[in-house]
Length: 136
Image (tube, rainbow, N blue to C red; front, top):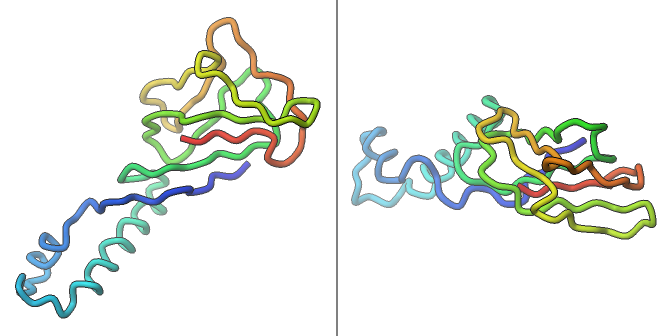
């Protein structure tokens, strides 16, 4: 069971101008801009790591060896906004994509919980590393 970052945030929670004001830097002087921008990114990433959550929209994948037995798939680094897709290796060894109507994301849960839809069960899979991948 692994959670992998696919795409990092494309914006930061703090602008360069806000950081420069906080640091008492001259707004017109661009000499330290690259360094300050890098510090903003490093600080966000460190905060996310420490908090165990994302602060800005990020794409993640949860990789599992199979579906849980009649239980939810836990999606770490909340808050989960949406599930892009669920792929799995069926018992014949063929990759399948689960229909959106076959699962539901529990709103506001931490960690995010992905359940089979009402009346559905997780499909049978080949139990192997990476048999189930959820992108969210």
